[in-house]
Length: 211
Image (tube, rainbow, N blue to C red; front, side):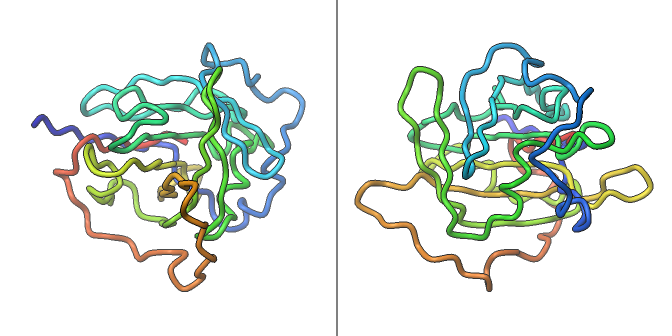
């Protein structure tokens, strides 16, 4: 099976100070949410609704979100939305210029156990539950975050730890669909953040976000 390593070049989560900024608000002059072409889905976190656009992913290349803080990108190199198996990958810019904080940033403050919805255009929404949160150095990704088989999951990536104008880390949120016969579990703060795993250059379909 062909393996590919992706770089989440700007998608790493923002440092703590930035996470407390007014992330869901965009200043005048920030890029339009229409950037990136047609909206194929919406991610809704509380009252925040973020458009999702398709973004290409080629073996060995970075995974770039749309060039705006007001939309997320759906990787075409991974499982599609509402897939029965494998990982669907979403990325977004945590900030796109001064004052232009990512409209999906509120999800960064949500603990394990929180639910949110993803609705493909023209289809019913799916409720997802956050099952893991990580902040790791760029490139230190786990193969389980990009699995191509097994139960469906959603992996969300953005940039973190802004220092000297460069993002050093990647924020990772793993979520699983909530089935009608399963009640969401209560948040467990003891497992809300995992320690950085060792680097694994052989991780398949591993994109490096540019958030």
